[in-house]
Image (cartoon, rainbow, N blue to C red; front, side, top):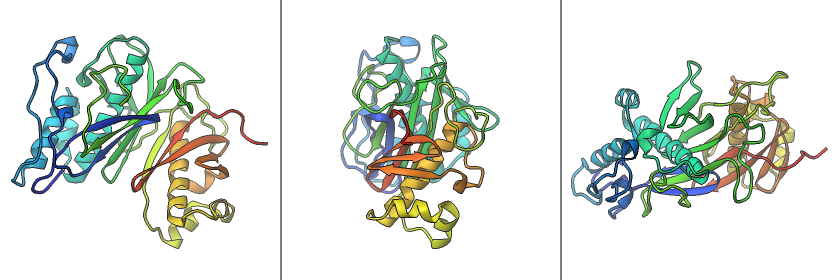
Length: 318
């Protein structure tokens, strides 16, 4: 999103359990940054088509494209937060807003709520930093957002349903996805039912300490960059038994997946890691599924990142 010829194209992709938004360079105009004629604007008003954002020869192309994306998605106090940030931090924060608004719009659309414009979904934070959303109609939703190095993810569930966490398989109660800034595609929010910060926990802590993420409507998601980490980091993050669970896998990817899974469960519990990642033990691994402190987490590789989302998967092994 910076530098000559950069673009801020958005391709919204609905994954199984989460939405993902990626910031990449690209060279083609992307209709995702325009509102096609007849699609709803705020309060259901139809909007005229806007200008497409594509390859431009000057260094301001990325900034203008980012601004166009912000104008499509942000409203009210969100602009105040946006203006306090700069550089990659602002980009990633914006990507998080895109991901969660698309996830919420898609989730509501699947349930017959009608079309919403992204600006009708208001994202706010509790004093603890935990994100929440307000939508027309007053539905109570639980959301989780995370971003890291140009990628943002979000997931949503019914805040009042004890079984509303994202489930594996089509038709899950929780919906999530990936918006890729740098490829052809479209935003999902204004197209209901289309197949399209900082990682702060939306759930409520349960009695019983670390690892309890079973509160009604709790959701947790995280995304981490796959990179080499020091032996000191690994030693502080996981025990020897957890490291052995990853034998046969690329070491950097395993450590990243375990780290992301711990973060996701801690968010769902409403506490965060609190500087004690070893309290959130990876107890078992079954393919892309990790059992962390009694909670199943589904992991997925997205390019150079790993996404981890707390999900339902039947009873944990004895």
